[in-house]
Image (cartoon, rainbow, N blue to C red; front, side, top):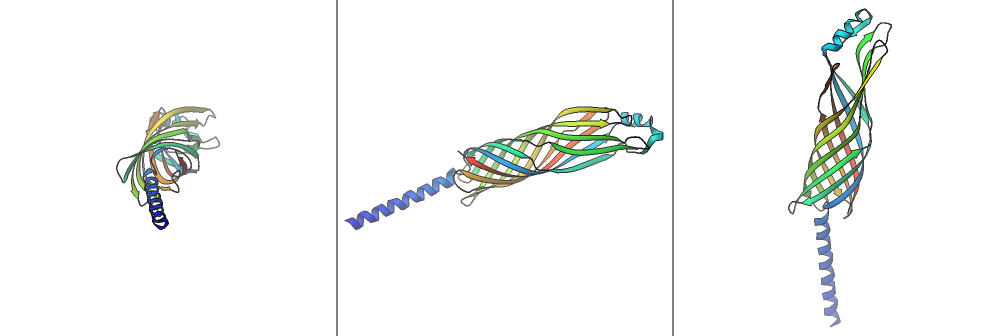
Length: 233
């Protein structure tokens, strides 16, 4: 009798453990999550001058060594901002998971300066640029691979504040700020260390809209490699 009872208890225990494992697998990547991340960001800003700047530089023609008009410039800088990420995972099928999320990073991306004209004995005319207050919303469809992995694609909408400062040869400075809107795309993989602890690794590329003023146009871009560690509730 005791032997039969022991066998039944062992069978019940195995069944419960198996059920728990299956539930844990099915529950991973599902529900609300909060994560902290760090990113390696390569920022780029393309600038194209306008006819107005060409006319203004003509007034300083005897002081100008080089006048780059209607040429494209690209300044690239590397940054490592910290971000906070809020997301929610929804099961689409036994293997498919859909995730929607909001990400905000705390970086101030200095994108360097573009020398429009080099002066002879007077200051150069330069345009300096930076991005800050960057946030995004995203949608990520994913495919479960094995017990603990999720491979996913990512589409996102981004917004950031662009700050621009034009230092002119007459030693005056003009500054302007714009709100840039952009679209991003990328791929990534998530790993469930436990039911609640997850890590994500992803790469994405973002292109913002072109903003024009009387001095020219600017088009920021960024390539991001993100590493996030989060808690799934």
